[in-house]
Image (cartoon, rainbow, N blue to C red; front, side, top):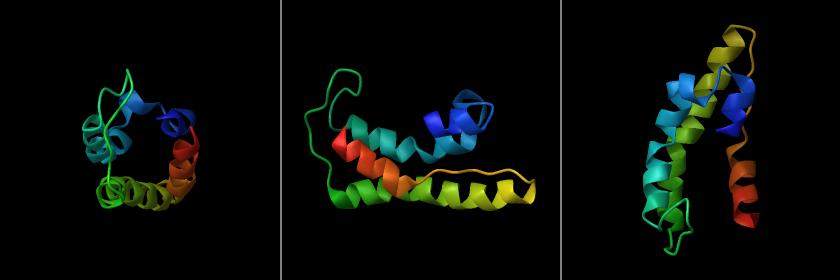
Length: 86
């Protein structure tokens, strides 16, 4: 969300990024309440499946935005690594 807000009109106005995150949000919700702490576990396999649409969106948007002289930058691997250390 922060990357989209920094590079566009914002998360609320661009559906591609939020749509790509739907599977991830649903998966995270299976681990508990995202606002008040989680308690469940998520398998690596399920996480990979939930991240796949995000990776695809990033790849598409990099190519599409380049056609218009824009950039879309988001490193999925770095975001996952950062989240693991938070």
